Length: 147
Image 1: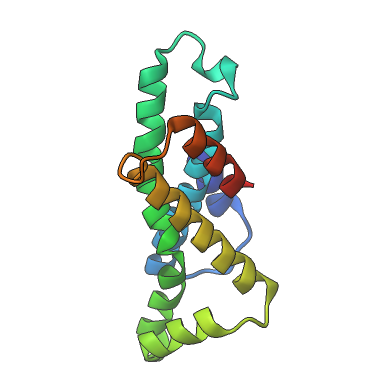
Image 2: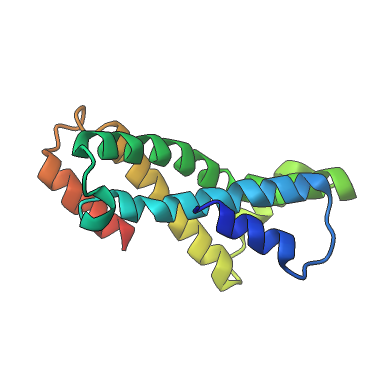
């Protein structure tokens, strides 16, 4: 269901036509974003969703979806630059570095902040036990990083 909403929006929205590569990259990114939003429904907060399910299965699904979505969203800036490389013969690294070092727009600043927070959430999720964090400490830290 979470992937159907962005797919329907992309199909029925009044957008200018783009190349197949741009459409695929957009669908992957928007789909990952919506699945990441679905993570809120796969947590202890939403008792209605997890009612009747073993919590261990819900946590396992939550982890799998998170480990899939975070790398896709981390690659989002690359997905923006990649199609332009094929169309305008731009130098890929120059365009990528310019995008990451230009702080003139609010979208770039918010995007870089989101990527840093995503990386922190991903690293702490993967390395929680190696960092010797208690589950309650890690969970509180994750709640702070999400908002």
